[in-house]
Length: 471
Ligand code: SF4
Image (tube, rainbow, N blue to C red; front, side):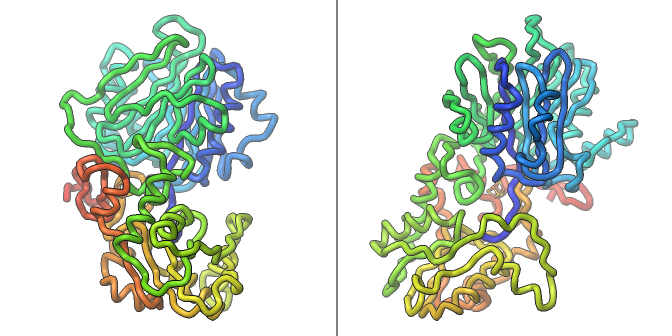
């Protein structure tokens, strides 16, 4: 998989004496959703916040937890899809509102944030960050509603796009000293948001991988358009945030293809099973006659490749070793050092590839440049033929809902035919999974999923980034 940056992940726990520690562990299991910054806000009569740039393990030290006291906490890992990668944009954000102190962690992207920001600024609002999430906090702070729950619901009526949100506040309607946690999923349910229990404590997270790590039990996913308020141990309260019932959802199908961890369960299905089925379906649609074995580009394509191997009856071979210790190594982007960018991460295994006709499975092609480099590396092993198979359709448009895809002009499939891409990559054959095949493998229908970046059918109004006008 080429460098396609993920979005964000959230995790929160209510009523546990190790709340911040457990959120910290949960965030490590969501690290794949964002690696630029991490943060936790806890509540022990006052709200305590610690955020930093980098990975979860780097941001939190043992001494941090003597500060993050309390029985409730929310946390966030971030990759900047809106706003630049600087500490001021690290989440959870924490502000003072007429409804008390309020912290928020946001996964997704508000598509009309820029025009809302301009409106708010024209009436005197001063922003501390460049994130879309702060726009929502301003709307809540300016709301005329009587309480926070109604203020959040009415503010969400003004925003469009994708949001799975976790709020924490120092207020509690029942006089409970543990504050309140509020979780909300947008009416189309673009991003996952899951509710669980750890003993008698409530847990909310972006993916079930966070639950597995801390030993929490899966209860259910939040419905699209649902807000839950957790202010006591015994029960939660559920609200509908959207007045008009929508007869469709827009679960991001790319979560199954690439973003979510294969050990998670989201949108009602195991990511592992769907991803393997994407590979199986690919083998049915695009067999490679005469191939000797199936090879994956690690790590994200391994599950799809095993599905392809099972369906085709071909053996699965480990063709690459991926270094997991590369991190943010600085390599000159030009000149003699340029060729080391792919090599530092991947090394092909000559012994498993030499003289063979291979099926090379990848989950997607974005710009095509990284795939091309990897194929050049493969050629050094004296592999005979490379038949590339992609377990999703061509990406022809950007994502507006929280995934950092390049612009349309930079996406190779938006400007090149499959045959042109094949030539550019330098492979004997290239085939993609069909849109219908991808939806079928995800065990759903086209009215359940967002497929915008593949099909061009975006489920909401899209705004031109420069003029903020509708497209
Ligand atoms: S446009 Fe693509 S990446 Fe974005 S939400 Fe839709 S399917 Fe997911």
